[in-house]
Amino acid sequence: MKLSIQDSDKEQLLNQLGVANLKFQQTYPGDKPDRQPVHTVYGGANLFKADTCVRMGDIALNNLKTYAPNFVELAKVLQLKNYEHLPTLEKDIAELTSRLDTISEAERKKEHAWLAYSVYNKIVKKLRTEPVEDFRIDFEDGFGNRPDAEEDATAVQAANEVAVGMQNGTLSPFIGIRIKPFTEDLKYRGVRTLDIFLTTLLEKTGGKLPANFVVMLPKVTIPEQMTTMVRLFELLEKANNLAPGTLRMETMVEATQIIMDEEGRNPLMRIVRASEGRCVAAHFGTYDYTASAGITAKYQTMAHPVCDFAHHMTKVALGGTGIFLSDGATNVMPIGPHRGENLSFEQQKENRDSVHNAWRQGFHHTTHSLINGLYQGWDLNPAQLPMRYAATYNFFLSSYDDAVFRLKTFVERAAISTLTGDIFDDAATGQGLLNFFLKALNCGAITEEEIVATGLSKEEINTRSFFRILAGRRKQ
Image 1 (cartoon, rainbow, N blue to C red):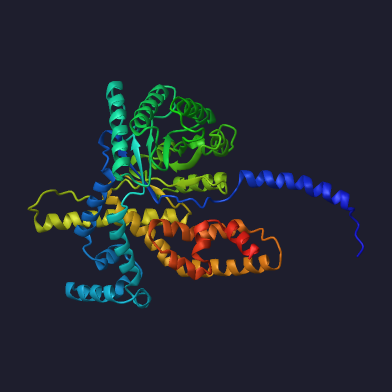
Image 2: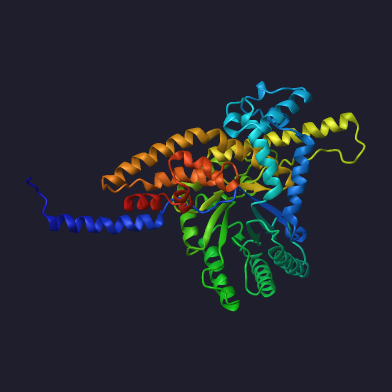
């Protein structure tokens, strides 16, 4: 076969292209297979205790049982799939629940009630076992501007409580603190709180940090703020004998200037690069951002179009970098207006209607985030937790069959390429499909056995890497 391009010329050109391709892959390695929490719960640092997350679970479960004592009630409030086929009388609901409790999962999936029943029971189990996935001890908006002596004392107290939580095993799987921003008027306060908290904690624990510990820097607008945090981390690591790179951080998208700078460019990638690999996530601050965009308080909501614009700009800027993205919070709390033991029928109804209305808003906001590819959001009150999990479990379970088909087809296609010796260069897409199941598995929506239906073995699933799965099949 006659060719026109000389091998030497071809190799020179393709080697040059290889350098550029590798540089691109380093910048955009794709989605991380690491666990991403489905939410971050924020609470004022002055209120944090070692068992805060446990107590939040108890409050959340009580809220759910009070205003939706069974899965049918929740399904009708949220209008989950097939809710119209569910019974209304308590006797019939009890009989249906009893029957569903006794049959196999395969048989339950044939029932109209399967989705609602599964969502409800998974919420209850989650609130009993791991109600909070991520908690941020807040020294910013949730704490406010207080006298220096008070914030100093609170930083010491919070650090001591974290140390007790580490010892007792009562902390959330992910945890961290949010300090004040590195604006000109608050930078000294932010640094001091960070120093006091970490120094106290590390002294108390013998130099150990909680698993998945992170420091959140709010209201970032310029790369220099991130660079300053990195340099401070280096000083703290050296002073406390921590391995270089131990401390990690998050940034926040809270101002229009972080979406577009004075030259009409999106600065998010430059801001993340300024962290020198220490930034793991970018969180959206709904209410600061909408205020920055000139939206009046009445209309500052997650559903406002300016939020979608910011989300899409953030995803375009950071897509494929492995940075976790998080949406903001619903500010409507599912708490009734009336308190006390001896409420009238009318007061109980007002409470129920108020809570159910807030549930629907929280459920729809979280669902909207998930549809837009934001798998994490903020919760501000334990009463919001049931709807965080209701929306998350409904999203994953209702999409399960379609996702199984897509990944199974993709795995088979990849296997053919592997067996024929071809290089399968679409592993990033496969990782994205695999991550759907990993996220569902992490939050308790599905089990490992339910991922096996995709054609992957448990051993392959545990690698959490589509590239490793392909490499393993190539060796076989």
